[in-house]
Image 1 (cartoon, rainbow, N blue to C red):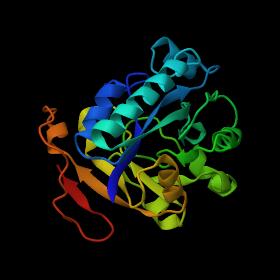
Image 2: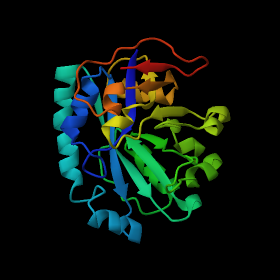
Image 3: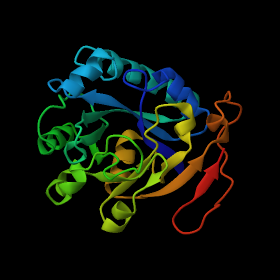
Length: 257
């Protein structure tokens, strides 16, 4: 069994750390698999164009460098830490109206996809690459930020195309997703180191990209709440992750590092 996090941002979009720094952050804590999923915003909306100007999104121009660096760091991550690194992105459709905003993760992607267009078509495009399609934070987080309800409102229509719905995102646990019977996944949506303390996924499969994607599709996984005191305090990395056992009951498990 190993810990995994499939929603992580680097400084290619709005994350604080570089991709090499993310590899070390997770590798030194004995994670078995991660996915780098930087924002890929719409090209034609004013919010998307603003993200481009502010360099908060992947673009057609930056995407090849992004994929090349992930490929390079994937080799180092495996050789140094035995950690699988998957290339991904977060197709980001933002609106001032919560019911129109949607974020779709593509995990295990190979090619650029423009985020403009209907989410049904975007999900199809992700699946066409053989990648995993995940609905990111599909319900309100209770925080003062843009909410992304659009995917959840269309869950019956999109169900056949979405491999998993984030039931845990950061420190949020979405009870409606947990009770829906839909396939689920838990990740940090990490932008800064202290967000390591968050919901995570535990897998029991071979440490190989295809085996990992298949385990998620077949829901051979569990969700835990992972606490990292070092990252919360923004201290240097001193020791690898050590599971101290269950600190909560039910399906929720807390591990500390």
